Length: 414
Image (cartoon, rainbow, N blue to C red; front, top):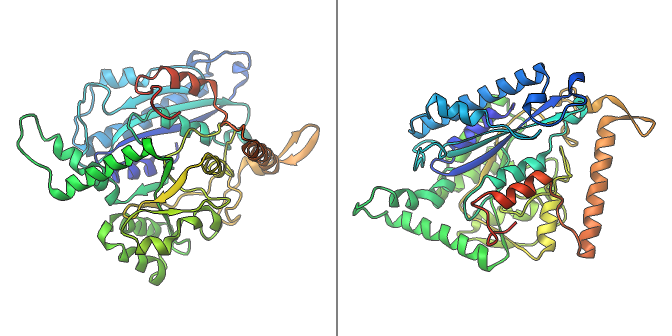
């Protein structure tokens, strides 16, 4: 819930593009809920209020994005109906800018947003601090109804060229029935490129990599935001401006290269600046780019290994990694994640994970217990990959939705 501003920036940075977002709300279990079953009717008054205010916040964001898109907001009745949809202890509501008869809401200034609010009743603040990141990624994936989908964390904003490359011709083609308008040649070319990616996703085992940049930590928060805005606005044929921002002005650098070089090193950023076409890269241990992937292993919560294990699985499955040349992502500054294991301590606020807890009769720091468990999951997954019998663990809710949602069928990758 504390990243809604980043979600708005992401949506505004992908005008006309479909974007599915899963927003997480942890609710600390109250004594009155100890023996209660699932569903909102069994929540404590305190948690009902928290859920209500979260819903209000998401509705406000949704309306803001619709206005930015030039689409009339849904009626209050439709919005209330969507917001009151309840389920088990994970999904509480959903909003979709295409869902209430809004038709083609390809945005003039914002994305076509499909928004999910998911809540989880947890036992304590320590558990609340380790967000079920992979389960949320899978939930957002379920809401994607397009031939291709890329997982992009909420604190990353796409370059202006991304929407232009994939959507310009599609928008021109929807100018109206009977229209004799023809998309400009550049738009038709972009559309062919998008069609080519879809075609090759069915005929090849390729993972398409979108390079990611970070803003320099030496800058203050406001300056980092300004740099992020400048970086996403650079046109695809002026990438030399990004190079100057990296090498000369020291305003940006390859994502997380200051704390985890292996994460994106294989993308080969120097080569990217010299390439006008996609290029292949070899998988390296620890590689974790943003790309199109199968579902994620839901056992991984919080920070550490959650994306690394997925990329390793994709590589072990025989996929090739290909870097796109004229699109990119830019990381926006934010407070360190509570479960972050590499964030500088001077930047991190006190986290419940730094408290002492009792585990199997021992007094330990919560963060150490969490990291130990995550590392165990990772080692188990790697051993299973080597044995050829690893399958990402999926929760029951994901498996059910995957079976019943009408836009998912047996012809699409799980």
